[in-house]
Length: 234
View (tube, rainbow, N blue to C red):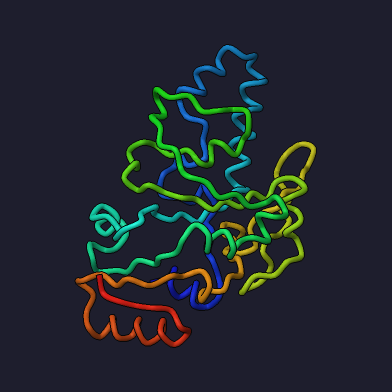
């Protein structure tokens, strides 16, 4: 319900990667860390720290990729066992909704790759590759991920832009020697970004689970239809 309320209010919520349920989100994986043992200790430490820092400057919104109905797995894990709802869109509509962030170089859309962190290596040619890799325990999620990365000049272009509830990003001093400043999320004490979107052009329809009460279904239907978005029971 929170995601729907946020979207109806004109905001797309992106959570910081280190706040996801899986503590390995955005990390380089055990297999890749073991390969770094061949490098000098200071180089290994530097690479690992940079990946940890990057997690604090990456924010994601995840969508289940399915051309038909949401799978039973998704309803069970994310839809309250059919007592929740599904928000449907298309890759084209998602791309259009976040076009300005993608065009400035701070936003990325891609399929999530599922790997065994203990056996599979991560590609280290680009630090963001790890932010589209998830443990294979979650392969049934079939995610498409929209990512905003605030490090560097592209992310810093978001500074000064406003979202539905304040600035998109803020500056924060990092506890390093020498002291450094980093660009972080502007929402929920830096742990999230709330990006302005138009729900009417982003959402195809809202599908309400079959176990949702009739009273709640009618409440959802009324609010969704009010702004011209189709709504139905699964």
